[in-house]
Length: 60
Image (tube, rainbow, N blue to C red):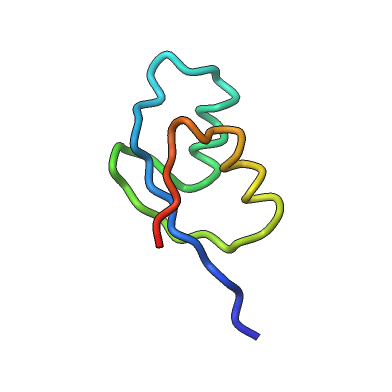
């Protein structure tokens, strides 16, 4: 069974953000602006995305 994946893009800088939010962005695998990564669509990853919703965008 193939795991469903979603693309996440960092659209805003983490400068000036809380350290926990920076760590969440790094945990998603994002390092620099406009970088896109594919992550497995799990409830844990969805929660991470929800906590930094103002920094990232989900792409189709």
